[in-house]
Amino acid sequence: MTHPRELNDAEMMECARNLDDEDASYFGNSNAFYKLYNTAQCAVFYFQNDEPEKSLNTRFEMSIENLCIVGEQEGVDEFTLDLPAGKNGYKILKPIIEGEATSIQMRYEYSLN
Image (cartoon, rainbow, N blue to C red; front, side, top):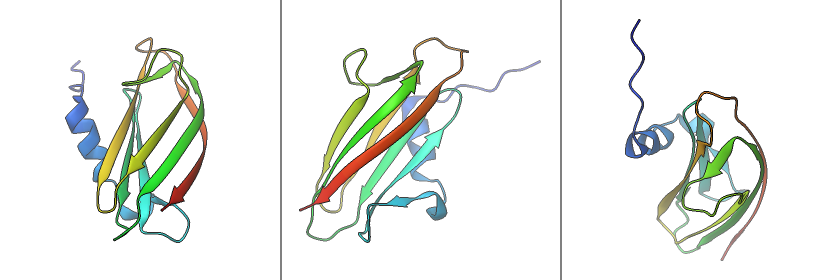
């Protein structure tokens, strides 16, 4: 039995970016959105700000099990993202213990200035 190859971070970010447009969650009536690529290996948030003159400022608060936010201190369960007009960004969550169940529940707030 062969096991599928695990994707590296760049490949996972590409998968998130390439999700269908119907997977996009828009911030209100704006041209800014996020997509969530979620697998047993990771969860990747892809953010795109297509607003021509406004920066996106967002804060995600999460209840996460067996996950850590890459680039944040251990135990942190929230992140903020400031995204200038026309830019994109990512946040990656990875399992703390490989092979065990993970879960995410989240809420967010945002502003466009």
